[in-house]
Each structure stands twice: as C-alpha cells, then as structure tokens.
Length: 274
Length: 171
Image (cartoon, rainbow over all chains, first blue to last red; front, side, top):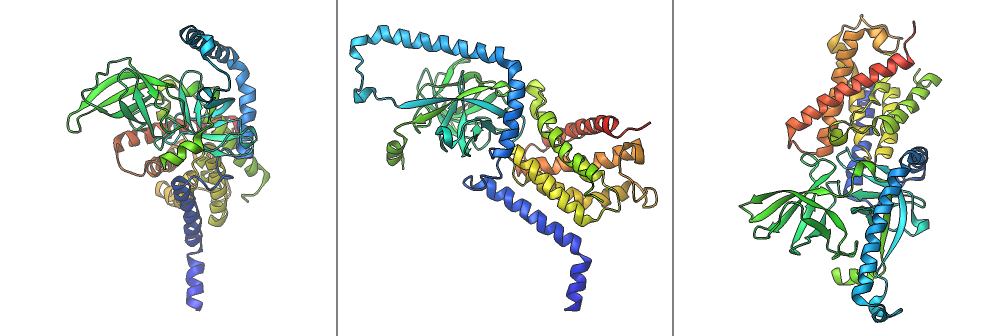
C-alpha cells in the first residue's frame, strides 16, 4: 500500500496530466459526434456570443454602406420576380386564404455577428435564438444565396453550420438539367469561396457558369435558392460522374445579414421522410 | 506565483487578442492558411519554479475558454495540455539547466533572441502540427498540413515578438 502511494506521489504530475487530457479528449469526441449536448460550452452561449455581439455592434457601423448595397440589390431582384409573376398569373387568379396558396416558408431577418471562414470546422453565430422563434435544424439564407443550417440555439443567439464545414451535406440541383448532386466542402482542397458538387451523372450537360440551386427536398430551404456557379468541371471515369467545382455566391468573409427560413409544414414533411 | 494579478491580465488579454484580433484578420483567399494560435505564450512564458500542477490547471482553463469561443470544444485544450507537459523537455533540449534563472519570466529579453526563437519555435510548431492533425484526424494531405504548421508558427512568432515589444520591453 505504501509503495502504491509513493508511486502515485512520484508520478502525480503525469497522472494529473492524463486526467485533464482525458477530460479534454472526451469533450472533443463527444461534442463532435453529437450536437445535442454542451449547449453552454458552444460559442452560442450567452457570454461568448454576447462578446461577439458587442464586437459586431462596434464594427458593423463601418460596413453599413456595403450592407445597404447588398440589400438594395436583393430588393431589386425580388421586385423583378414579384412584379413579373403578377403579369404572368394575373391578380384575379390568386385567392387569399386558398390552401394551395398557403404560405410555406416564413423568413426572419437576423444579423450574422461572427463568421468563421479560415478554420477546419467553421461556424457562424446569429443574433436570434429561441426567443425569436429560431429552432434547430432550420435553414439560413443570405442576400445572395445559401448560408447554412442552425445547429445550436440559446435564448438570444444561435450557431450555424455553414456550407464551408466538412460536416455540412445537402442534395442540390443543377438548374438547367434538374440533375441531383451532393454538395461537399473539403477543407484541404477548397478555400472559403468554393465547394465541390459530386455524383452528377457524366452525360449531364454542365457548362461553366451554370447555376446550382437548392432542391427543397428536405424542407430546410425553399426550392431555387442559389448556391453558386460552376467554376470548373472534371470527369470521374470510374464512377461515371462529374466533379464540379462551384464558386459560392456568398462571400463568407463579409456576411452581415441573413434570413432564417422557417418551414411551416416541416413536421408534416418529416412524417413522410422518416 | 501563477495566480498573481499580472498573470491574470495576461491570461485574459491573450484570449482577447487571440479571439478578436488574430482570428479576425482577413488575408483574402489565403486566409485558410493563416490561423495562428498565440495563447501558448501564457504557458511557455511562466517561470521555471511554477509547479506543473498549476501550469496544467491554467492550461486547461485557457484551452477551454478559447475553445468555447472558437467552437472547437476540447481541441485547443488537449493540445495545450500536451505542450504544457512537454515544456521542460523542449527547454532543456536547447539549453542546460544552469543557463536559465528559476524566477524570471521566459521571454525574448530574459532568455535571448536565439533561445527564444528555438524554444518558442519548437513548442509552437509542435502545437500547430498536433492541432491540425487532431482537427483533421487523418494523415491525408500531410504536406499541406506541414506547410500550414510552418506558416502559422512563423506568423505566431512574429505576433509574439510584437506583443513582447509592446507590453514587456523596458529600457
């Protein structure tokens, strides 16, 4: 017994190191493998997100002109769409309270208070949480295109898993041919403004500059939100698929505003998906 | 003592600089190569008569707080603990035990430029290499990873030299 105590005393530093290291590695692997736990130890907790929010309020003033321009461009695009649709369909055909015209998606405007873009597993923080009705597994879109999916919510803030995170995965569409593809971001090969689209069949006619859009299949995003344009196209002969490098529409180094997408019929859709 | 006021200011100051200055720097498309970690300085600069127990506790909390901000729970903490444990090994690999006084902070001005570059260089390089390996959890693209580790080590050293000239340098 005395020898054991002496042994422990001799190696107490090493044992203490092992103990702390074990805790750290436990945190690391349990936090990456399931994202339901550790709400308080993620960056959307009130203290760290509060500090990020403070920084955002200090610095956002200097980019107001840019934000205004982004919003104006988006506004013009939306006006284009809405007014043109009015002419095609005609007012008398649109009935209020008709169930076929029931609003599917609700949008809530938020500010992106912190955007990581140079790390391996990037992460965004927005300044809206459960108090504003933001829930887990809802989508976030920016003024130009897709941003990410909400993974963690506290009462006033939420953290987002953006496209530029290796854990992000989504089925997307090639706009011209309606072919399905998988969106993948590989940290070693992609920088923060491009992603890969894989598994599109080799016979699909994809050209440089073609748009890729969301499919709307999982109910996270409405159909047709722009993701990016094809930058270069390679062929994978063995798998008979195309590997397409896509330039993202959104510049993750300068996002300031976004919209959380809430699908009103998500629960109903989930019953059919599972 | 590690728990004196000056050290506590360094502790929170380094986290602040790391999160809101170093991580916020924008280098355009090359940004992904440039993510140096400078919080190791707090552990490396501690005097030699600080006990390992105190150092490990400080490293644990330093790592956890940084991880919470960067949303990489456990990653910085585990590597920082390893560096803390290996600190004497690195130091005595480049100099003999008698060369450095027990009760002075290990910084640029106390241990000399050459030893500073070697000791901090080796420690910070090990930090970045282990950090990227654990983050990626595979040996794929090892050369790119090595390149990133070297770039980040150099930039972290430049940062630290600046920091020491601003906050420690006395005529």
